[in-house]
Image (cartoon, rainbow, N blue to C red; front, side, top):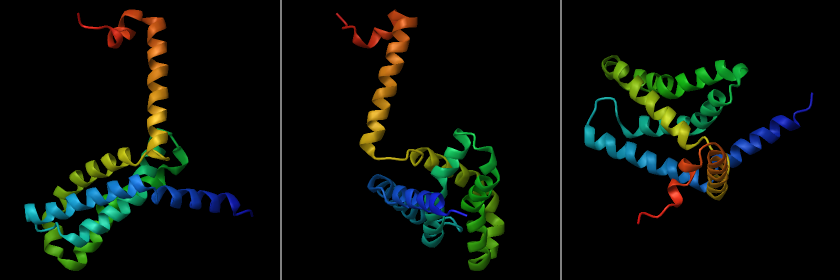
Length: 165
């Protein structure tokens, strides 16, 4: 069995995790989580759980979003497991060890908020590539949309180019 494609995909995944813009957004998000743990004083929100959940979300949120958007049906069971682990599994494991009472009290409130944050992060980290490549792709998409619009509805496509005199 040839393991070369698997190694290539692991190398590509590692390269994506090391992109400066992704690491910067992870650091910014982790900073907000840590600041929130001081500000809100929730019994289940501390620095270690923030780091643990952010780490796993960083590894899996972008991939999970790509599995959903690209309809990779065979990967859905793994995506659901990864999503559950990031949203609730690592949280429940951590709090079952640190403070089971906080887990029992706060688990049902944490899951919906964590799921929303997980998919928001998935949208941020969905793009595989550099920031410049993302900007170029957005411009290309925008140009394609405007040319398609001009052939169907010229008065709509020209709105952005008219001067307000």
